[in-house]
Amino acid sequence: MSPVTAANNGEYECSVKENNMEISMKYNIVVVTPNVYTIKITEGNSGNLPCYFPRTSQVTANALWFKETRLGQRAQLNTEDNSSDDDKRIEQLYPSDHDQTIILRDTVLTDTGKYFCESEGKTLSTVFIFIEVAPTDVPYSCSGLTQPWEPCPDENSRTGEPMLQESMAEFSMKLYSYLRQSQPSGNLLLSPISIGGALSHLLLGARGDTRKAIERALFVPHDFHCVHFQMMKLREKLASSMQMASQIYYNPQMNLSESFTNQSIEFYEAEPTKLLENIEENAQMINSWVAKKTNNKITHLVDTVSSNTQLMLLNAVSFSGQWKVKFDPKPHKGLFTKLNGDMVKVPTLYHQTYMLSVMYNPELQSEVARFPLSDENSLYVLLPRSNTATGLQQLEEKMTDTAVRQLIDQMKTTSPEPVEVTLPQIKMDVQPDLNILIKKLGLSSLFEDAKLCGLNSEERLVLDDARHRAFLALTEHGVEAGAVTSLSFSRSFPSFSALRPFIMLLWSDQANVPLFIGRVTDP
Image (cartoon, rainbow, N blue to C red; front, side):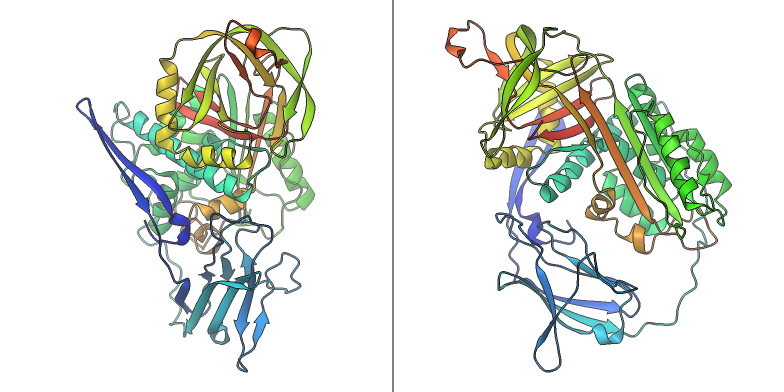
């Protein structure tokens, strides 16, 4: 675990299964830090100045950053997006997040000094910066790093598929964890399988430290040469119910490697595309491509494309699934209770005796129901123990990849029983900030100093932009719900009502990977 920060506080579990025996051990890590950092940066490079709100605190506003002046006074740093600096050197990496780290770009010798991060008069961190004179520039070189991605040594190996499944589960829960921390209470939706596919597409051209960084972010071993072959097989398995599009757009003045182009087509069915000279035409070209790839579920992904763009990584995904057990076709209404106690009337579907697998999971301290869908998919709805922000947060904190995989296994062996079911109808179309999520995954270097020699060996490339948009509709044809009554004592069978905030997990039973993860707090 490196680097260790206050954000690493928490409980961890290591589990090993072997010869019908399972051994596990839990670790409670408490990071004790004086919150004083000393950082050395070579002139001209960038550096991160760390600062963290305590995990128990609510983030109501960004912290303030100051630099100590020669006279013993302090000057406040401008970290806002509306900075008037032409070459905005200081940026808040994760606005409105517990991580209040800023990045200082293009450092000069006069940046040496003492910096403070404060909130409400309390110092959260003190950072001593020392700028060292830059050595003579070493010319950018891809020497020895231009070879194509290694071939998969055994395409019929039985270990490749489960290895990717485990990696995708861990990546998915880590991604959701980062997203929920930055948005603690609103509706959330992302497709980890789509984002993972886009990053693995970029991995195809990454070399050196950049390759290792993307592999760590995706939780795949460094010697897992079959990752792209397995991603291709995974996409083929999901094709019947999921439209997934991943594409790389690049500056027309670049010469992309022929081997990267060929492998991109082979593994991702995507030929990297040159950007056009006209900004408006670029936006139209990209949005038309996305609409085609998602069967018009998503028709707009970008508003504009900068004329200086070198490289854009895009992905879009949509899912459509049918209920295996149909709901009452009559329209129903219900009252959804939000986290603040307010009640809103929502359209629902209702079934009095739905054959449903439902259980209470003590590990997650939540009620869980599994709704089977067409094409070997399932929707899992997780109801927290209490209808409070704290109850929701506690459930989310317990949703590790191990806990979720164990839950899936348990639910598969839980027999359905007649249950009175109520679910709200939902239509979600969400575009989370993929650039921030990429940075959270430890991939800031993609935007600063990437080694993408597999794409282009002639000049340094950096990622300019990354986008993700997810669409999910839960309707009477797919995942829906019905009205509920408070007269539960009169029923002779149990009930499952999701008319309060819940977590939903769309899982591919065939591929054994998560497709979507979402939070519904206001339908």
